[in-house]
Image 1 (tube, rainbow, N blue to C red):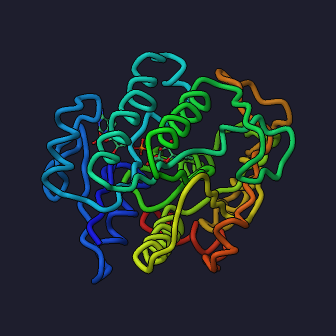
Image 2 (image 1 turned 180 degrees about the vertical axis):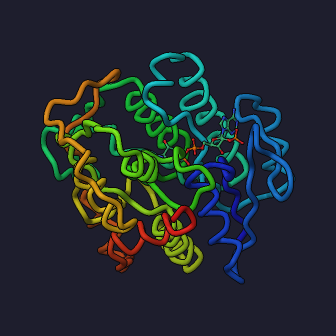
Length: 293
Ligand SMILES: NC(=O)c1ccc[n+]([C@@H]2O[C@H](COP(=O)([O-])OP(=O)(O)OC[C@H]3O[C@@H](n4cnc5c(N)ncnc54)[C@H](OP(=O)(O)O)[C@@H]3O)[C@@H](O)[C@H]2O)c1
């Protein structure tokens, strides 16, 4: 199966591409924008002619669309750019896939929900509380309107990185290591999810598709451990054998952009298909942080 991964220089796309390239029955190609080069094809998704040229060259049967503007604060500061990438480019890519009989898997977010009624099934009513969530929800809608495509919603991600700040999860190591007192969000409930786990979920989906299974509509995946940012910082401290007495739980954190309270995703639609991965969060987090300890 030929697979194209957009955003393959990003946190998720890197792991997805690396994992798929290890499979003997998958030929995976990745695209990047500012970090293109080496094994990553240069692609500006806001340029439809580039999108069409890459699809014609790679001829993928499945496109895993990871590229997006995913920082809520940046989306709010530059809404037109975020909409152009998250919605308009997604529509052009989905339509170009439809005309070439390729199936698009659109990576979306738990931020399509308002966080007041967790857990959320894949068909639960959406109600994003910030611009990022609204743009990703609009991206879902244009994808599903454009053809026989599907969506995979994910929560807060972390995983292999050269830069701890690429994820708020790994950035906690610096907060813990820095001995000055720090207030940390102890309000919002999150489900930190390993990109390596997501990569394997996607591999299993592709195996099903290759065997003839029909994927359509919305799917969800999530790590299974609930934690506030503060609770996660305690876990990071324990993994790194660092003192956490300087960390102060903040039950009323200030937010530049509104954030949902708890968007726990119900993963039963994928689990019912036999998709499963069983690795504790602590094991995944310890492996991710090991190069920095
Ligand atoms: N990170 C999270 O916690 C999280 C949580 C839930 C859902 N998601 C979703 O998961 C997906 C992947 O997120 P991520 O964390 O991997 O994002 P990321 O690390 O910020 O990576 C974004 C990717 O998009 C590419 N890109 C940016 N502008 C582009 C353009 N004009 N044309 C083509 N590519 C462009 C970037 O390429 P260059 O770097 O080469 O410029 C990069 O590869 C996104 O759809 C996001 O909404 C993320």
